[in-house]
Image (cartoon, rainbow, N blue to C red; front, side):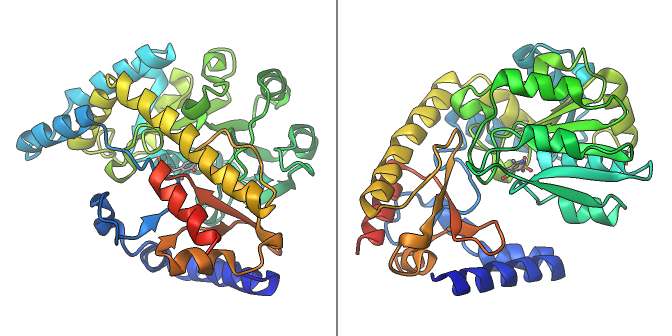
Length: 369
Ligand SMILES: Cc1ncc(COP(=O)(O)O)c(C=O)c1O
């Protein structure tokens, strides 16, 4: 894709997204149902949404099948049990945790909470923006702070941009779409310096892949620190919709009051899957090591083509397709591989999710065809 086509493509995508979120999703991702046939060589390879190509885990699958029989009843206890189990994993109590139908539901809830007092929000550019249109509708204008030249979140610049009316700072670490991670000491320093009346919404959707530093242990020291986590990535349950937020109990209580009903989020089936996958250490280890192998295949392919990329601490890679002689996304699409996406205006940088080793080999061979 040349620069003009790329810009046109992303402008169209953004426009369509604003116009009709649902139909946009269907247009871009038409074929998820086919993707369960993983060994179907003719099926499309979907590398657009950073899903785990190996999930759900065998234990989660069994637990979810088994849970179907009891899904005619409202289930109360499981919400508490799952929060207790997550607490054991992260070093918190159930009162520090709220569950959602994916972490994106909770990103929305936190921004709703922040928007109750007039003000604005801050976030890095580029970053994960799916929650932003709803936040703006809730009356929270968002200022974006450009990443450094190395495309890392510019923490000092974000701190400098905080004003008295800044209600929320969103930080994604490791960042989507760039895959970069801020060092632990810098993150801690950042959290300390954000004023106490400004919520820090730290999105840790990808920390598990490379054991990137989580700031969850700081929650008890900072009432304004809110950490979002998801079962959609290394835990392989994106379609099951399960995520959670860790914060101080008083913050969790206030977030729960914004839910129509405390048990209205993830389904019983998903929560059983969540409980099970947390026990499936073998599956998680397998997914992490396969991600490294598959990412290496893609890195080598990019190197051979002379395409610069950023070393990623996630399940996707951000690269500059400017030097690629053909239309990068169209070349992949012709080989039934979807997902090379642009996230910055007037930019030739693209993001591609990491699939299986075999899928990434197909990507590389399609790019060389
Ligand atoms: C950084 C980030 N946060 C949140 C989400 C949403 O995840 P969930 O499926 O838990 O809503 C994603 C999904 O891609 C993401 O990349």
